[in-house]
Amino acid sequence: MPPREGITLTGILLAAGRGRRFDPAGVRNKLLQRLPGGDFVVVASARKLLAVLPRVVAVVPPSDGGVADALRALGCTVTVCPDADSGMGLSLAHAIRHAPLDTHGAGGWLVALGDMPFVADATLQALVRAIDDGAGIAAPLFDGRRGNPVAFGAIHHAALLALDGDQGARRLLTSSPVTTIAVPDPGILRDIDTQGDLPD
Image 1 (cartoon, helix red, strand yellow):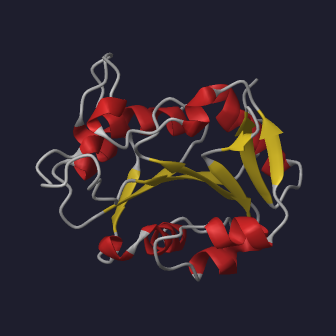
Image 2: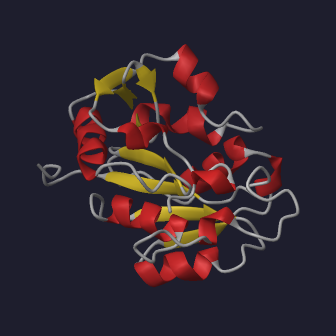
């Protein structure tokens, strides 16, 4: 079931990491590897968000090998984070600055990772509904394990803008109430971290 009309969440796609575990030499960008259907990893991840939300802001590093072009072609708003190498927290804060709340201060953000293209649409829809229904933070749970993406309500705007370092929003998740949503979706735990993670 798609989200109800009036949803004001913005999708955030974090695509600014260097993927050093995938290729320590930095030659192969994991986000630009092809999946069996032909899409780049990052394109498949972005399509998931765009199927559920009307606006997606993607954050990329200054030199991305073509990630920004691929995401713009899909219809994402792309913003370059000059400090991307300083960690996911700074990249997320940068993205939030470029994804403002609506004029009434309502809404929030569904924060997804560019290397996680296997999340089910139904999971994204459930997270959006949870924020729409009043949750401050909503996270999916599969087989007892919490995964990604994570949705944040407007109440956490200031805290998200203050993020830095490599922990992303992890501290926020441990210090604030989180609504967990059990989903039959192993994709919330499946990322492309090494070359062996790419499907055949």
